[in-house]
Length: 265
Image (cartoon, rainbow, N blue to C red):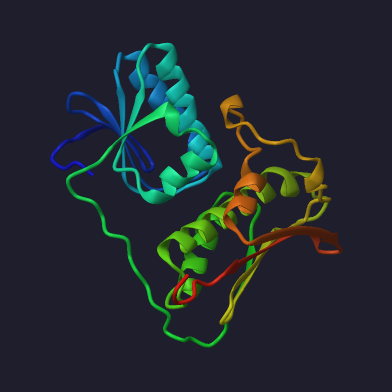
């Protein structure tokens, strides 16, 4: 992140710098709870004449489909105003999401002088580990689950890219549970997360108390429609090795697997 500048507006981990030319500075995790603030801040700068709209993402650790939709919204509004969005310091995971959705042409990328090195992790040959979480049907579930899963994954040989994929899939599954499963539930049950790591990889399950749905009936998502939601299943299927759904007495469960990187992969 660029240093030495003060800020004029702070919205959680979304900052508008006060130096000129103004820019957006994004850091930490941005999920669907933050996307309305990101849209509003981008709209504010574009309305003030930012050309281009510069967005510093060097310290952005996590972005889900709603955060990506907010960036696409900014890019399309910028195009309407005859300018563009410049992403400063976009890491490989964000660039991969742009390629995956064919949205890379909407942005211009700019490197930074200081690039944060990726944390390369080797396997510590840990014994199999498990995680069980009973989470409330509110937005605190997103951060709690990400932190707990990070602790489970530590030392188990997943590459930084694989860990980013797993966190993306987890975030999309919980966001879908909060958007769709919990509001349709007739019980007070929350969101349950079960994860199991062994020598082959990760098994991850997210269960919500909703009635379930048939994923085969979902239309192919179009991020340019700028809807909040609708990309979650697409991203989960894109970054995990397997994604399946089933409904039983517990509710609706999405089960995902990710194979651990092996030497020579």
